[in-house]
Amino acid sequence: MRRRLAAIMFTDIAGSTALAQAEEAGALKLVTDQEKLVRPTLEAHRGRKVQATGDGLLIEFPNALDAVECAVEIQRRIHERNAEEEIQPLRLRVGIHLGDVQRRGTDILGDAVNIASRPEALADSGGICLSAQVFDQVHNKVAFRLERRAARALKGVRKPVEVCRVVLPWALPETPSVRVTTVLNRSRRSTPSG
Image 1: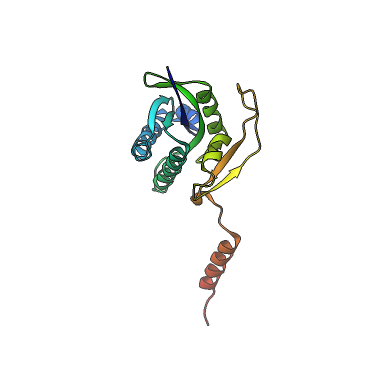
Image 2: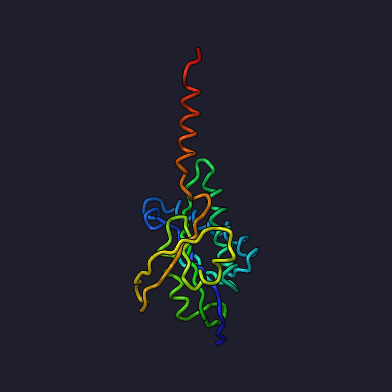
């Protein structure tokens, strides 16, 4: 088996287990929608789908930057999809790790693959979490903010894992000044003239 360095992405649909129990057809449609949104984005960023993992995907990239830029693009496309009216929202959690893998046929194996599934579990619904190894590779190459989180002890991993989250522009809270301006403008419109 050949060994090589790879960026490994795991995705997972947040809330899919509960949705499958309440409405299986809706949950299955989200899995299909995820695949449709992710596939063209992978091609543009040199990603390779290794396998489907239930309601998620295991994806391999040649480097960390391609993986992170792809993850942001996926979340942007999902955000735009969710803005459509009368559609079941798709909330994806994404985790990315960089490590040494072994290839067996089309599959990838190794400790790095096991660790790669952990940052995804720490991601917010609709968010992206990166391992410290990915952060080290991309922090000075991306246009968006990366926010470090405290190291966490994770199941099956000996040492605590340090992660950071990608601060997505559309997920930023409204600034107080914008809220105040909006309220003032509304109150001026509702005040009778005269």
